[in-house]
Image: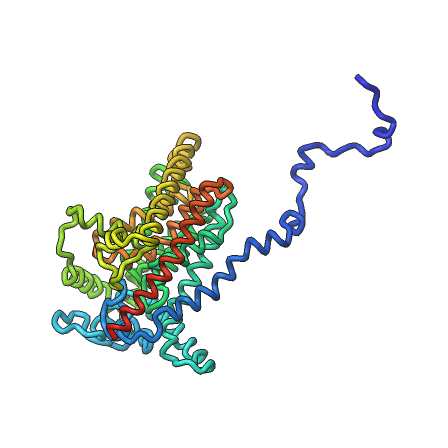
Length: 462
């Protein structure tokens, strides 16, 4: 062994390795300014997205005059509500079966989507004066409502991605995926309640990422969500999974039952309160009307028919992301029309299917590792697994509710699909990064052309 250097004797002793490891590093040194700016560069997407959504279908008269001319959206009915929302006002007869008018449908939507009608009405009243200040027709402010809602969804998604991102992926590509997806673009550009339902779903998923989930509070919040869309009660599946991941066993079952009781009580209590303005909200009347309307709009095929599942699945998971076909109503065979059209539409669809298959494989492999190392509860607690489960649950909801409306209902599926992509992909891997970027480029080009094609077709109908 060599003798110690004389210089070493004059130096202070080095700190222990463990102590050096835990010494805090100032945030401004840990993350350089350039890196922090790049991390938040996605915020530049917001103004461009707002202009794109607010302008895509503004000034197309048929959207406000005829029912379900664009992707099964109820834009004409919601236009009636947003321009003059009053909780106690009856817009028509929700039970009308013959010669059903816009007011009759508006009354139906006030009952079933009251939170969106209230929030959207307030947004319209705030936006209309701004449009007047800039010399624009204040009627165009109607199209700013869902543009603002979709921007809120992007902010919520950004917050959720920070909590479901083990690989440290940049958020921008996944936010662009949500913003440029066809169903996001279409329904973010017209009055329709489902984008606001996506707001509620994203907010709920974000709260489920907290370290501890409170059954009564999360159950009560689910009851509030159900006031806007009673079928979002399906979020109770994710709440049950989160509670099981925390405690497991019978305790998890008891906590789930407590949350279910709180959600039903809050929902029924909310309806009873709203019935002070309009008796149609009374819980028993709400249930009776909902069952009547479900029968009134009943689909023509049984749920066991394979076509039902194929139609719902393709419009939920494929056409919602990219499409290239001429019919703005987005028919059930929209995927077939896109594939037969060839060109960029076919390329975008194939790229998205390849990306989705890769993400599903990678997430399944990660879930298998979680099961092996931490058991079922560890896998159940994973944000990517929960987002994938929600996408699967919505397929069942669509089949039960109204399978031809898969494209419309996909607005609450596309953001969780972005979460699944962020959780599964590792963009440090070259093939995963380039597959994602190629898909995004094709999506943006194809969907821009599709929106312009839809606008031209609707203008011709006007």
